[in-house]
Image (cartoon, rainbow, N blue to C red; front, side, top):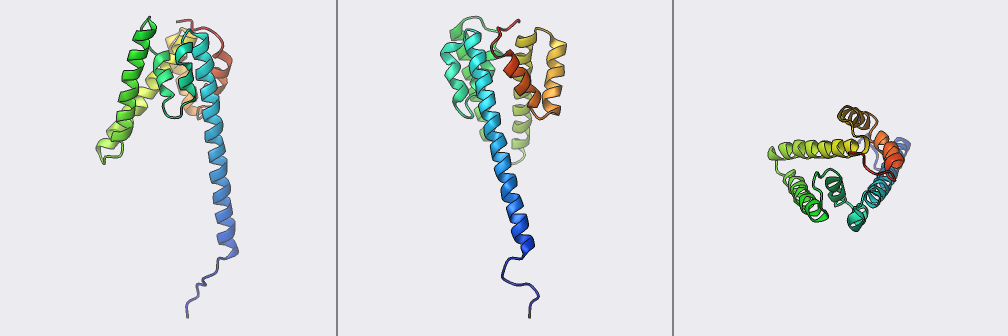
Length: 162
């Protein structure tokens, strides 16, 4: 006769409930992070004469279009849109290529580099100082994006300085 029963023990119920609570907590953090990022992107776009593309902030996964627009060095709206669209397609392509074994690792690294570079560009546009932008990227990584949320909420209604 087996010593293992078919009924769940109190440990199974406890750890199952703990896992469920963790998943709910993580999901809540993701939703809060998404909403705060969308607010930052939306108001930053409105403040910095990108109002006609500000709606992209609310579209999940495609709101990186605004991040690419913020980092653009172009001057006209048409050029900014074109460059942002090109980089968004590159971003989406890299995200799709991630599922391919081995090559996916390189695509992941490229996605991380692309994201960090455009976050740097956004911080640079807010501060106008390259050194501060690098420091802010490091703080964003170390704090798990908490620094970006706080700084972004402070700066979202102020025009870019660079």
